Amino acid sequence: MRRKARLSRIPLSFSSNEQFQIETTKTLKTQDQILASQNQLLEHLVKKLEAPVLNGGFDELTQKMTRMETIQTQMVETQKISSQQVAEIHKTINDPKEGLIVTLSGHGKWISSAKKVLIWLGAGGVTVLVGALGKLGWSFVTGHIHFIP
Image 1 (tube, rainbow, N blue to C red):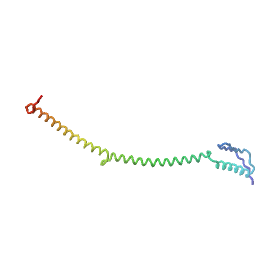
Image 2: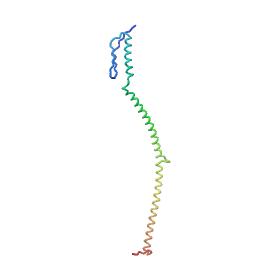
Image 3: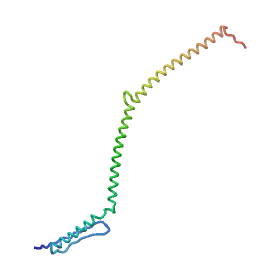
Image 4: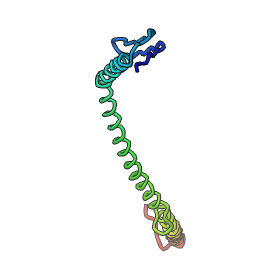
């Protein structure tokens, strides 16, 4: 029992240097002819699939993608380390017990107390100087010190 089959027009095109088109508009008389045309099509597809994709460019593309993925994972790890370091710096600056801001405000208290001490010492020094000049002037006026020209 052989069947007659009619295939409609089947355009197949592949993008490469050659164009492959199969157009079947005639009536195939036997199943053997149908199988032969299908085998021919499959052989052509196998030939195309075994050929290097993009002239080896696909392999190069996958290698580049792999490198990009490794670089991205390295960047993520580096970013995690950097964020930990920033958190440590933040803690060092803003820690309420041992932070830099608390330490500097403690130094500010010491500086303000040292400033008060220096003001009192300066005022005492000025008082001693005024007293000494007053005593010298009084001694000169009362005649205890004589000026000889």
